Image (tube, rainbow, N blue to C red; front, top):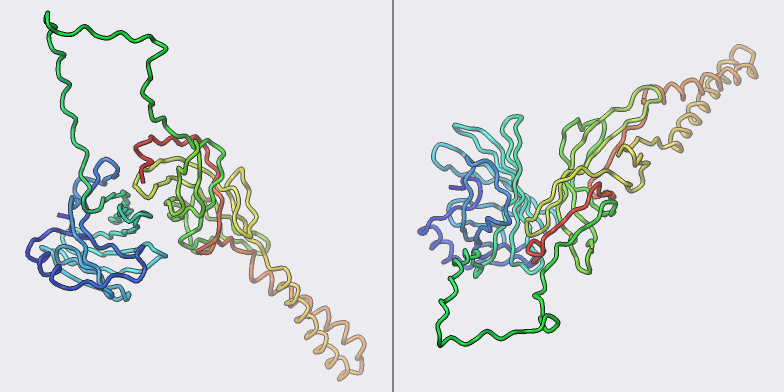
Length: 379
């Protein structure tokens, strides 16, 4: 049973269905309905984390109820429930039209589940990108659910043997080769290496707090076309990794942040792995060869600090010089002291950190061809 997600229980489902649901104002945020797992399109995790094959969601204005005791408050408050010997504590928040659900499981085995629910444009597909953390171990998967009425593809029956020819059987009609019409095959579609894909960063990273191995999460901003059709729609998911995080040094060392893009997941769950690099970042200096973002100092603010401190030092020096009968010399000494104080402030601050804030636009450059089958591009 899928303990941290939606479960199946006929009695509780009946109770939920008797409650008149209040749909979300935005249809892209309304997950109500019956959902069936598409095992072909899904990328499952370890076998000790069961996944519910079918479940029902009843969504109200303030909460989402699944088909057992799993409920999520939509006002940001925490919900708790027990299943067996484990306690589940969940909190949710909206990220645009996507719903983020973080669940802490305590019991015989402690772990954390991070889900991201997203509906397709036609609301026929629910994609759940899932991460499970157990200590330092992290696993990822994608669950693709189809809306009510969808049936899993049936296994085609074995081909029947051709009937034995008899004397009464009609002779086959011969067709000239030029008259034959070959059946058109649906070709694969390739997004070539070197394609630039615009992304929006969904979590902030910087050299002061981020460390090597930290994950970054992004979403495509614009659709990517190839072969005369949309292959990567806007809203597709991209996962990345911080490969190096070098904090700023003192006095001149700049922070350096190296990031790498690891995988792309379409809204229907089709996933491709790669190791692509950063091409550009909004308002940042980027080394395209290394995928490095360097910190940049606010020179205007630094100059102002030096100037202000220098002026104050000059005033103090002038007062001290006047008191001793050497006002002119005192002004000169004060200016020197002020400049030294300003430079000391900058040296104490150290170099600038490299920061990429949430919502920053990045550009990913594919390092290899990405090929999708025609079946994977059905929305």
